[in-house]
Structure formats: C-alpha cells, structure tokens
Amino acid sequence: MYGSSNEQTLKELIQQLLDNYKLQDGITRAKLIGSWEKIAGKYIAGQTDKIYIKNGILYLKIKSPALKHELSFAKSKLMAALNKSIGQDYIKEVVFI
Image (cartoon, rainbow, N blue to C red; front, side, top):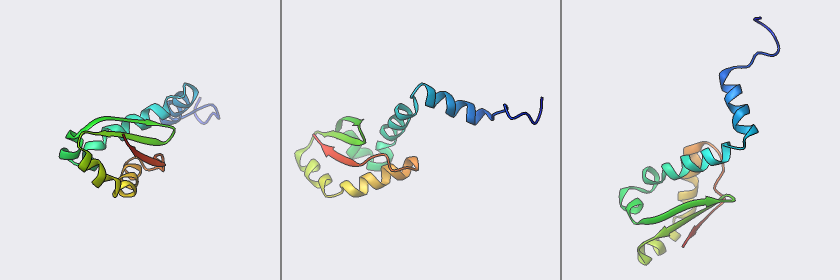
C-alpha cells in the first residue's frame, strides 16, 4: 500500500531500532574513538595507551608525561575537532590519565 502513514524509510527504521535498543550512544563513542588518529595525528595516537568515553568525558591515557602536559593546553581544540567529526556536541570534557 503506497502512501500509507505506516510506511517508514529504511533510515527511519534503523534509527528507531538504534533508539529502541539504546545503541546510538555506543555507535557515537565508537566513531569518536575511531577518529582519534585522524584528529590527533599518527604520533599522538601512537602515544595513547587507552581511550574511552564515559558520560560525555573523553579519557586519554598518554604514555609521555611531557606530551600529556602539552596536550592539556589543546583540550578545547581536541574536543571541538572530535565533536565536529561526528556533527554533534558529544564530548563535554577531556581528561588525561
């Protein structure tokens, strides 16, 4: 039945599935973590031991204390670049551990 109000696009159905099973947050985190090397560069990504996101906070374990110190000055730039990469303000804070 074409024109029925019950029709949905595939995109809408996928979005509904993601919402129903609360999968969107995990997909967003995976996209952000996956874009870390592109945003930070190969060297910094290579110096990153661990990266995870919890409650909008990006946690980065950096091997080098000197690099960790330098990156602390670029927190807002990193946050803006990562949020831009996914098209939403998801990361609210960056914490170096």
